[in-house]
Length: 111
Length: 116
Image (cartoon, rainbow over all chains, first blue to last red; front, side, top):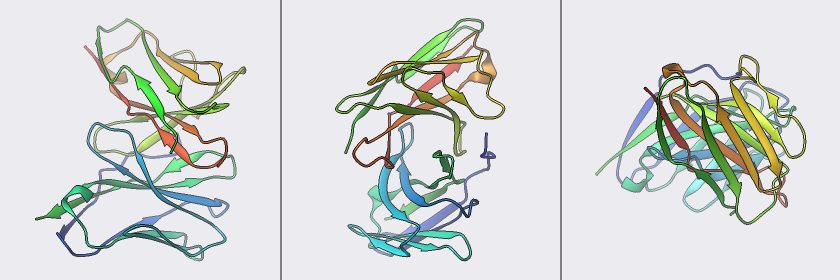
């Protein structure tokens, strides 16, 4: 497959603080990007998406930033809560119409 | 959002047996579904694209004779792991696209396969 298995980086934040999760994507032709949240033993849950003709999009407590120049994506979570603890994946839709996942970041919220 | 149902959620089988996993789109028709595999503490790896009424498209390195995919209807795709071995133990996840959005993928709850 296109992904290489990597061990998950981790991010620990204090409850109430803002979290920033970063992701570098690989394909400059990708035109659509998605952030997913995955809790243990469950499938990924859609959080927010952004098209390549945008550089910022906001949702409820979440903001996605896209920098196409350096192929970088970030997810900002405001006022992080214990329920936000999970693994977060960025994903890109390639020119072949496939959705490929990044390596993921494990977010741990400290009460 | 759209609902994708996956069954079973967990299966334990003996080495050499075959296991079938079902993926259903409950409230929409999906001409395309995707199958992913995930090992512990790793990312999701795309295995294959399942196309209704035609052959699945497999990613490089995925054995088509090992992982049989059937997408016989617009709401059901199945993945059969044939002659399973312990190295096939993994978390298998299916997904489907909302037809009205055409890009947003929704995922099933996954199937944890353990081969003894």
